[in-house]
Image (cartoon, rainbow, N blue to C red):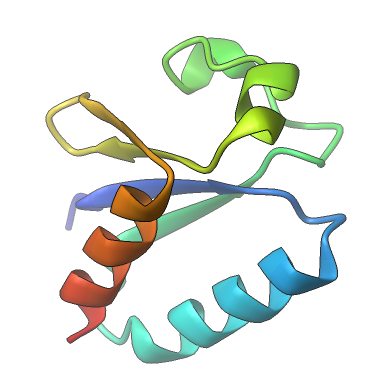
Length: 83
């Protein structure tokens, strides 16, 4: 199954980690792919060229059609996906 959303998050942020942990637990259909931008393995080329500084400036999500969403739209769509 393709992910409906790629959710870029800051793995160095306790609040972000708490939120993503909650979302992962509720995402029983694995519709969301979580990507830690704070990881040394993060490579923007695989994520619509969203640079680390850009990703840190605002929450980013990539829809399955390639569209980028930002800010609260990412959280709103995540909650829609998990029900």
